[in-house]
Length: 158
Image (cartoon, rainbow, N blue to C red; front, side, top):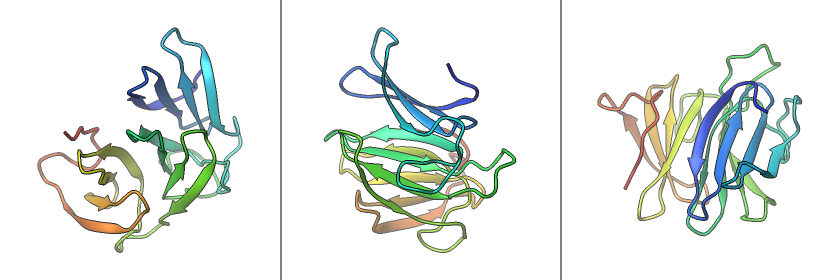
């Protein structure tokens, strides 16, 4: 089913979400393993609203909105997207933000996602070795280096 399963998220509704960096897709699975939904186009890298280029993580907010960290960059693809993509709970594209770079709101391998109880989205920006914090509309909250939990690691927020 997967070539390179990378990100994994267990949603409040009991479904499991998996990113596949080589197939460029995000898959939602029922508790019994049935495929419920696929975001992206299998085997096709792209930067459109329904395409990914090596997604590395997925997170589903309590309201059902879906966030994808897109742009792992380990495969021979034309370029990585280095962005966060947001979808509604029914899978409709809402927006994307970020691009390659090291400035505020820019990414170099957005690797892991977490959300705190206030609804802030934490992005582990791996190659930039930092965490960036956003509201759910992509507005930057703050950023900084994190020497305790390396940005390339998976992390959880409460």
